[in-house]
Structures are given as C-alpha cells and as structure tokens.
Length: 338
Ligand code: FAD
Ligand code: EPU
Image (cartoon, rainbow, N blue to C red; front, side):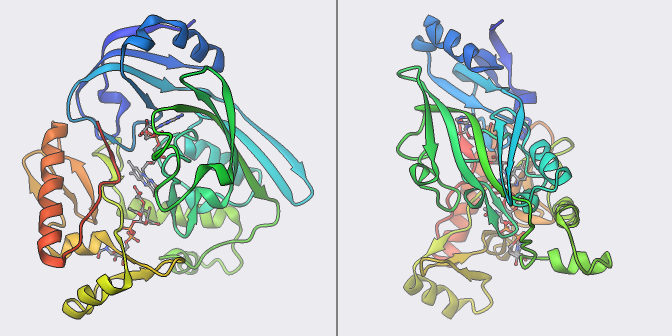
C-alpha cells in the first residue's frame, strides 16, 4: 500500500550522509505504486526527485517537493545459447545484480563490481569502471512516463549513451522513471583485464587463467583500496568527471605540464585524469571544515562528519577555480547537485 510521508530526513537516503529533509517522500515497490502515486494531487502540485541509492547526489538544501525512492526488485534471466538476457528491477542494488551474474557465470558486468546504487540509475549516467561501461551490456530499459503514465521501452540507440551521459540526463531529464533494465550478457567470458591494476592484482593472487569471479574479486579489492566506504565516510564517488578536451587544447596543457595523465578517446579527443589535476593543485587529502578530498583519491570529496551540502559544494567550487587557473581546464561536476 503506497504511503506518502511528510517531512522525512534524507540522511540515510544519500551516501554523502547529508542531513536534509524532504517535504514529501514515497517509496515505490511496483508499477502499480507509480500509477497510484501519479493519480495523487501531491505528485502534480510538487516538484519531483527520483532516487535509487542516493549515491550520486549532493543535497545542498532541504528538498521542498516529493522524493520518490525506487525499490522495484526482482531479477529474471533467459539463456539462449551463448546469449543471456537478464532483466532486473530498477530498485535492485547494483552490486547484488553483479553478484547474481557472477554467481551464475554470466559474463559482462564483472568489471562493474561494487559500484554503489541501483540498477535503475545505471543508465542515467551510463555508469562505468575498469574499462567497461553500462552501454557495453545494455539491451533495453522500461520507463514510466510521468506526463502520460505510460510504460515505454528504450533501446540502446534511444538512450544516446556517452561518457557519464545519456538521454535521461539530457533531453528527457525529469520525464521518465526507469522501472527495469535488460542486459545482454554472455555465457562465454570475454574478460577485459587490461585496465588499471586488474592484471597486476590477478598476478599477485597467482591466477593465470582468470574467470569472471576472479576479475570481480580483483576489481573489488582495487576499489576498496582507493575509494572510501560510504557506510563509514560519506561520499558520492568521483565528484567531477574526467575532462575531455580537444587535441589543440591538450597541446597547450602538455606543453606546460608534460607529465599530465591522459588517455585518447575513441572520437579523437583527449581525456585528462581529473584526480591527477586536483592532486597537482595540492588538494589531495586536504581537510577543510567537515569536508575535504579523500587521501587516496583526490577526485572523491568526502563528508568528515556533519558537513552540509553547501559546504561540500563551496569546497568543490574552490577546486574548480584552482584547476582552471593552474591548467586552464574546467572541471564539470559528475554528482547531481540538488
Ligand atoms: P541516485 O544517486 O539515487 O540518483 C542518481 C541520478 O539518477 C539522479 O539524477 C536521480 O534522479 C536519477 N535516478 C535514479 N534512479 C532513477 C530511476 N529509476 N529512474 C530515473 N531516474 C533515476 N559511478 C560510476 O559510474 N562508476 C563508478 O566506478 C562509481 N563509483 C562510485 C563509488 C562510490 C564509493 C560512490 C559513493 C559512488 C560511485 N559512483 C560511480 C556513482 C554512483 O554509484 C552511480 O552514479 C550510481 O549509478 C548511482 O545510483 P543510485 O541508485 O545511487 O542513484
Ligand atoms: N590520479 C592521481 N591522483 C589522484 C587520483 C588519481 O594522480 O588523487 C591518477 C591515477 O594515478 C591514475 C589516473 O589518475 O593515473 C586515474 O585514476 P583512477 O584509475 O583512480 O580513476 P579515475 O579516472 O580517477 C574513473 C572513474 C571512476 C571509476 C574509475 C575506475 C570518472 C569520473 N571516474 O576514476 O568512477 O571507478 O575510473 O575505472 O570517470 C565515479 O564515477 O563515481 C567513479 C568512481
């Protein structure tokens, strides 16, 4: 039975642990709940915010509207030769979905082990890690259209995926609530171990011919060593995107900073490591009031205690200014600022 609560603390609903309140709050367990909710006047009279795990949001003030938490669960799979289609409810915890695939020996998402949040949010910014992005395994998703109450299906082509981008963050922002995602996975593993420290970690473990579970465990190990655990120290992962710049702009940067960490992109541009830029400006591990950057990863901003969202936001603005004046590069926030 759908319940709409009033004046609800969001502290446990965002991994930054920011203590703000939502004027109204509803948790959705199935599509029927969505239909019921959108018949209610409250959903028409208020601005709306959809959340899953709250692991990519920074609340800078109380939310003066209706927060809708998506908790639609359930995973089903269909094997057809080497191809597997797995469909998961939008509220399934992303890492539970990864563990389900790893334990069934379904290959494709093992490099995305331990990313916080839900399945339903995974297409929003096309989550990625260790050389794999959601788009590489995405088949389709279903979504509730807020204006019409209809459920629509989005194909890969419909979603316009890019680096930490999709149509749901752009053109269709705020118009659809993702209810399920279908993934195209394989029974035959085509492992991707070339990124970062995966190979070194497998070697350290004495694993010569790794399987899906080995890669998943190696990725988990590397992530835990670099990233703060939101259950003990509030954060939302990378606070900024890695900036992607044109080759001519890169020529200027590299002339002045020959050791700048960078990667070519498939479309002929250059991606810079934002963590490196921020560290070079002296911010790594810095603590300012209740906020700061993580000691092992300067790209991650943290809540050292009772930080307010505004404090974290203002700190992030100082970092943007500093990187701009040192490198001439503008950092863009990855985290959704509310
Ligand atoms: P939320 O934070 O709740 O929401 C994020 C955005 O999606 C919001 O705009 C929200 O309105 C929208 N949204 C959420 N659910 C739905 C839905 N069902 N329908 C429509 N809109 C919706 N991200 C990466 O890409 N790679 C990483 O390696 C990575 N590592 C991280 C490590 C840590 C420690 C943390 C805390 C975060 C990390 N992130 C990473 C960011 C985060 O995990 C992802 O962005 C994740 O997909 C967010 O899921 P969520 O359910 O918490 O979304
Ligand atoms: N680096 C530094 N100093 C730092 C941090 C990083 O010099 O403080 C250098 C590293 O040495 C390395 C390079 O920057 O040479 C890249 O660092 P890392 O491998 O840690 O990855 P990242 O680019 O900082 C990105 C994603 C992460 C994802 C990892 C692994 C973005 C914005 N971030 O981080 O995603 O987990 O790669 O694939 O693309 C997230 O989006 O929230 C997130 C955590």
